[in-house]
Length: 257
Image 1 (cartoon, one colour):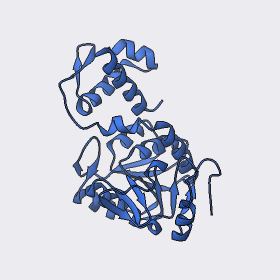
Image 2 (spheres, helix red, strand yellow):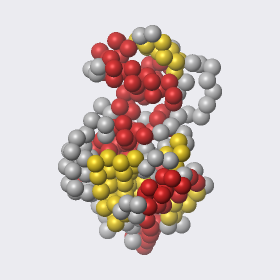
Image 3 (cartoon, one colour):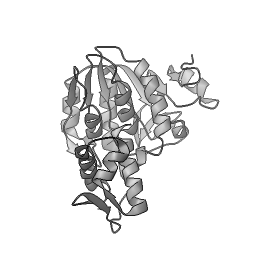
């Protein structure tokens, strides 16, 4: 089980029971009490959880935007299918850019059987997911913390500019005929930099993003070599991406065009 999935389940239990106990959670998930304490510490910063002696309670007075960590758990099955496709594109020894998205956390998990990878990311959650990996070189961009575990800004892009990746995986909020879009201009700028500095440029997104537009443009459809989806897209999207020179990958056939 991924750490983010475990945290989502802990948060669900908190919402139901309003209180959790470290020892009970450790037994339920088959992990150490120290691991649960670390999860609760993360949830305290992200989701209005209040740590107590031996457990945690839910601060029901907190009113905030649904946290990134929580949002990404909604489509875990789709992200897992996309991550398997991504893993097939990565070779041992590759340099991989991973953005700060739910898809990237699942891709990081799916890559753990690869050898000697170099991973550069602006995601704190990707770093946590890869904290138990050995034999890799794992780099963090640094930068300004925006939201839950997302690093952005000029410093982030400066670090990205110093490296060249074999492959970059970025996600998006919307996909239209005129390109890929993100809801936040800072994140869009980081994603553009990752794509620009990688030999192979891959967008990973749920099919529900097709036909939707967000605030900030990432790149034209032709700016991505490939798009990974969890299911075959409806027509005429196949023709649209074919015309743009963007290859489609999805689980049913793995590849079109």
